[in-house]
Image 1 (cartoon, protein in one colour):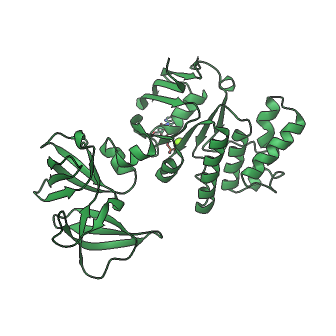
Image 2: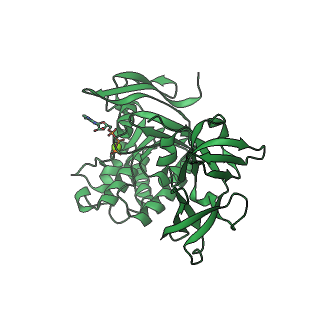
Image 3: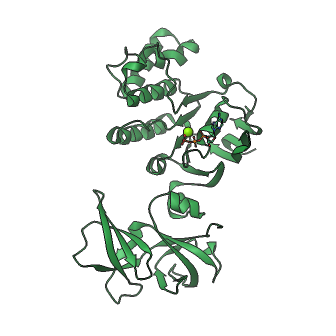
Length: 357
Ligand SMILES: Nc1ncnc2c1ncn2[C@@H]1O[C@H](COP(=O)(O)OP(=O)(O)OP(=O)(O)O)[C@@H](O)[C@H]1O
Ligand SMILES: [Mg+2]
């Protein structure tokens, strides 16, 4: 018996000739916060709806807390859900929308009043309790949907892009609030998003999906620093990519690589060297914060032409061009000194197998 709270095995789903889920399996421990992350259309909502029981898979199974739920109706699965489309009851007030699940569960009136009021406050909806959904903005409706799911304290919470309609400031506040809430009530949560920052900052585990399949599962740190496929490396965060072979590597993590056109590249700390055999082709991925300015002539220094920069608030992100024409992205706290060229070195990087063409 595994120690998973949620165990999803080999979900397959087709719409006509299109295979939308191709053998999706997930194991989620009790109290974990897991994000499903992937491009639009990769099958995130479909997976959630099957776990919830609103949609039947063609094959595969779902166990929750050791019980086979594959054929159990949604009401008996003990799941709270926030739908991507909110799905609020239009004729009911905010208060009644949030209270609904408690009424169905026959919770005493006095307790309903306390719990609903506290949920409404927590989601910054104070003062809106008597409005109906059409008198609210999209972001407010989204928070009502969140309050409605949280208030029943379900053992399993499914959230489908619950913050997508909020403006940036509120989204960041709500992100912190959600994390805090999830920690304090220790609820097992599956969170769907296509926002990488959200997934990285909220999750205990991230599941990256691509075209109906899982590409990689791991901690945010693993997903960011040790991508296992080219898709994950390109999908999460910004990076410099070079097509390389591994020439030699030292015990201290330093490595010598060679690009396809013969340029030598040094990386002081190369992760996942074992992903590629010596002499084999691979993709080197270097995060902007792993690229450093170097002095000309310094070991590993490469000359690069400064092409463009973006001021991101906390850093300046520079786009540079190596002599072989490859783009390099560098984060710098201060603007680079004038001049057309700079020298850079790679303080870190990760090898990823090249995707089949
Ligand atoms: N009822 C349906 N009939 C036919 N195709 C469908 C149906 N529902 C979903 N699909 C298709 O299944 C695929 C997966 O859809 P899904 O809603 O799971 O994507 P998603 O990852 O949630 O995307 P998004 O980020 O845009 O919400 C898409 O290609 C979609 O067009
Ligand atoms: Mg979706």
